Image (tube, rainbow, N blue to C red; front, side, top):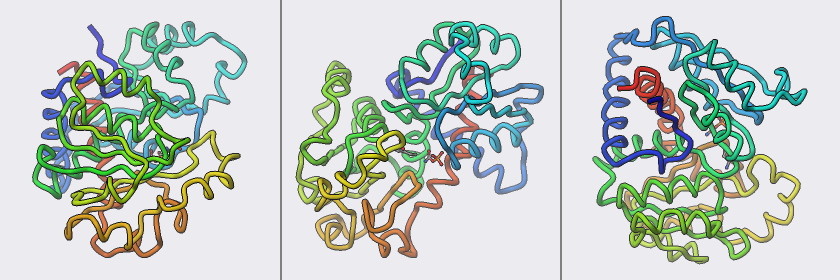
Length: 305
Ligand code: CP
Ligand code: NVA
């Protein structure tokens, strides 16, 4: 049976561990100039309804470097924009390509595609989740901290798609996660409800960024206004006062704290210029690791191994 990756709750702990191991192996092999042409003759379709730099490039370069072929489609340039139903598009695409990655607004759309396609469907970001991002980010944590099990992670900012995927991952992998959001911008209760069945005692929710950051090994932030929320930015800049990840906030974290951001970053809003430009930062490793992790994801879903 085909597998999809619509949210991290689709994965078991073993799946995560296999993906981290394989992505790190693929990264090491690529550094030695070894290309694993495991996807020769395979085609990935990308339907993007929202802007992207990293995720699109990660999927496209991953596919090419594994011997396959990516086809990017702006949703606006397809018949979807002229109301062809997703269930018809999904069945047609299944006759052309071997895997489909979708970036869109509603999670229900990727679910509808997955239900009607006979090929694997990957969530390349929705309003609800960004699963591939968090897979590559935990890969970065594993590389820099030696593992994820005993790592304390603090989320500081909006209760958005990236935060939701961190919560999903924490519920499966069991690391400590403290999520600090301003009151009006907290995590959707449905997200919390969905993970409570898995056991989420390791996740703490607060509106105090200092509490979240205390003794943290990793501090993670993201934009205050995600794609689709831009009109609220002026209000959010006021409402998120005290939530900027800057040197003062990081004072309470461990001395070797690692700051992470999925990018793109907004200097002077969710993160200060000096933290973003810190010489020891891992933001660029994070961006690179998307390429290696997307390879591992594509190989796993397309070859079904
Ligand atoms: N981090 C991330 O998903 O970046 P893009 O929006 O550029 O793809
Ligand atoms: N939360 C952000 C992530 C961008 C990669 C957004 O959805 O716009």
